Length: 103
Image: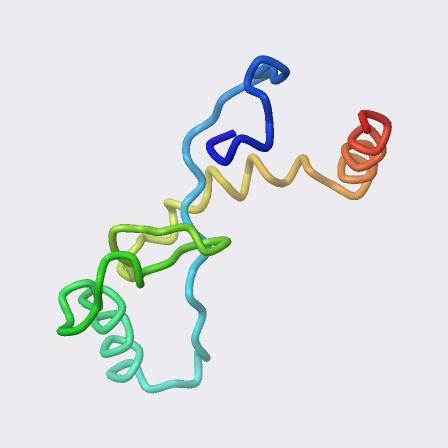
């Protein structure tokens, strides 16, 4: 809607839920704990690094974010994971079929 592609007058909100956190940045569990912590700190502090402009920090789908937060507790993802469990193959198929029928 922000880009003007979708007319907000044609959209009906069915439900709202808590924000879904950005996807995690995954690293190998085989890395030493010290290196994993250094990587977390580097992502947490990249927004303060010399030569880094706010427009350079990107999140999901290239959206601009203020900063990364690499010290996110796993339980923050629990609600999002629970909410997304209902989106199985049948639901995905129905959504895609409905979207195709709307064209």
